[in-house]
Structure formats: C-alpha cells, structure tokens
Amino acid sequence: MDFADYEHIAFARRGRVLEITLNRPEQLNAFNGGLHAEMARVFVDANNDPESEVIVLTGAGRAFSAGGDLQAVKAIFDDPDAFRVTAREGKQIIFTLLDCEKPVIAKVNGPAIGLGCSIALFCDVIFAADTAKFADPHVNVGLVAGDGGAIIWPQLIGYARAKEYLLTGDALNATEAARIGLINHAVPAAELDERVSQFADRLANGASQAIRWTKVSANIGLKQLAHSIMDTCMGYEWLASKTDDHREAVNALLEKRKPAFTGK
Image 1 (cartoon, helix red, strand yellow):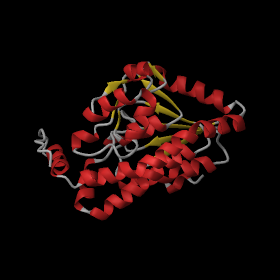
Image 2 (cartoon, rainbow, N blue to C red; image 1 turned 180 degrees about the vertical axis):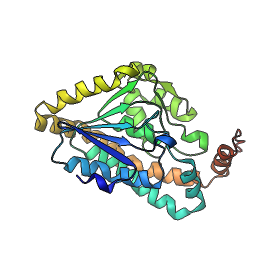
Image 3 (cartoon, rainbow, N blue to C red; image 1 turned 60 degrees about the vertical axis):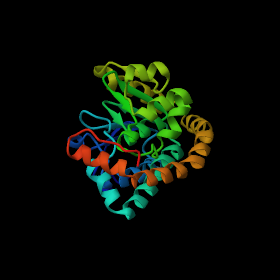
Image 4 (cartoon, rainbow, N blue to C red; image 1 turned 90 degrees about the horizontal axis):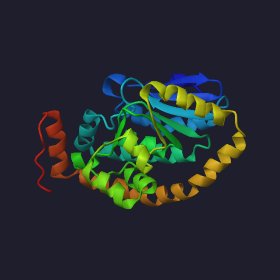
C-alpha cells in the first residue's frame, strides 16, 4: 500500500494491524474535498494491503470527525456539479467499507458527527472513549441524512430510537450509545488505545480467513440494504440541498447565529 498517495490520511503499522487516521486535526477531521475523495478509495487499498489483517480507523487530535467541512458544504450549493462528485464518493465510502473483507475497528477518540458518525457506525466493532459523542445532525442544516445515517442507525438501535435521533440531530454520549447498542464499548479515554490494541491483536492472531469470511457473510444483508436505499437517500439530500432552509442554515453557521427555518 502506497501511503504517499494520501495527503489527509495518516497510516501506522503495528504487526498485522494497520491504523488509518483521519488527519485534519485543526479542523476536527472535518471532510473537505480532499479527505472525502481519499476516504472513497482508502478501504480498497487497505483491503488489498498484503501486510495487514486488521484495520483500526481513528481520528487525529480531539475528534474522530466533525462531519462535513462547512466551506465544502457551502461550495456544494454554489456549484451543482460538486454534489454529483460528492454523492458518487459518498456511496463509494460506504460500499467499500462494507466490501472490505478485513475487520475494521472504529477507535472513536472524540466527537463523531454526521458523515464521521456514519463511517464509525458502519465499522465492524466500535470502541469509543467515554468522552466521545455521536450525532447525525443533517436536519439541523436543512439536509437529509443521505450519507448512510438513515441506513445504519435503525439497524443498530431500531427504527423508533433511530428516528428520534435522526429527526432531531440530538447527540448522545458514548456511555449511552453503548447502553442502547449503537456502539460496542465505551471505555475510559485513557484506556482506549490499549483496549483497541488488545482486541485488534486478538483478531490479527486469529484464523484470518475464517474471520474475514464471517464478516463477509454477516455483511450480506447490510450491503443489500445499503444498495437498495443509498441512491434514494442521496437523491433526497440533493433535493434538500436546494431548499431555502439549507441555504439559511449554512449562512447562519457562517454568521454564528441561530437559523430561521421557513419550511421552504
């Protein structure tokens, strides 16, 4: 795997474990165009990497990922062609993550918001620092949860709970997320690295082919669901991106004020 091909993602090896780190710490690992494009191919490269059996995905600095970079979001409604690229890459991120045969462990070191939350939740096993929080606040910026949130939240915590969080954009802390089954483990922040390393080593030292094929088998239904829903989610997000409410929400964020939604 050629790490030099990546600008916004960092890599480290520890035995047969490959750690992939979203690496825009000053921006809380928010997705600009470059990071979004790199995420659309990183799981293909990692799956083909001959030197690893297990992947750990995390974020640099204080956050896992704050979601969409605000300037990138604004650029999308200023340039309609940009959304088509974003939609194509967005599907690639989710589908390649699901297609990756190697187990992917999310090490959520801080806030996982929007797309960052969706990516974490699509991982195979999710560990989070007890100081982390999870949220999909697309509706709060006048958008549909089109990047995978509307698919994965109901599968993890049921439709009623999922819709409560998706329709409000409310955040929940890692302890509550673990209690309701959104993630696997909430652990003290000081113990996160060690707990993830122990689990990753256990998988890396296991029967790798059996582990891979068990993951592949378990993901079949989720892949079918994602393929049947993702285009609709993206289509509705495209429609929402053209509303006055979305434009108002982005402008309000840039101007540091509360948005005044009109339902248009």
